[in-house]
Image (cartoon, rainbow, N blue to C red):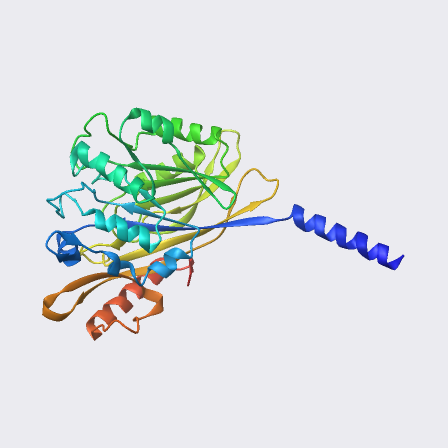
Length: 366
């Protein structure tokens, strides 16, 4: 009798735990991946041969711990020289190789530098990223491909995620037909979000290129657009373009039926890697989010979220050779990387500024 009772109790406990099973998906977002002239020169190992892999050797273990690592590719991959930095970013394909090996899975390409290599560059960038195994969205080779592949649907660990990507502009460079660069057009965005909702994903993410450069606070236009996106179904909003870190906030909107809807908004992740020299542009954050999906529930929800500070260090080695590194600042100086005291102080100052600016948001040691 006792044995039968224990068996029933065990079966009941198992049934409850199966019903309460919650799956987790760890997302990690990187900010602006830039390609300035000094970065191109630094990566050249012999005439016409480039290797960017050293740049990401210290941040790669962090990226690889994510289920999905996403970044903003703020440059083009034209597939052939000339390779140039600001103001027309054209980088070697070797950068894409290094980003893939570092652990990135998804790159968004709608930003103000999407058209830097004109229509051929848009096509070449898309085709190169696909060949390297990335998922990509925000720019398209033609309207048919946009119709087929947008919103981008990402399937991982039993989750179904819809990803959308838009930019405020392309620095006045027109988009050559038939290529498409997604713009911040609210009518089109509302239609895209309606399409995303119709596909019944567990979660909808908008990765947007917006805001004012070098401003550490979001502006009214960003807040207004964030509210529009949330009202139309976005569950998470991640921003890029200012090249400095802006706040991470929970924004709440009132819906037409009187109910409220909230979403986390990371207004700007700053630079992931670049050669920018203005105050605050020497680094950025990786923004981490854990999505939770309970069995039998149609939608996922945000669990923990936080950030990893990432600092750009330019190492000057023998005979003036430079290497750009993206360093997880919280881990201190890598044991095998000799850094002068001046650089160590700069990294510590960046870390202190970032922590002060994001006070109240969890700092993750992934």
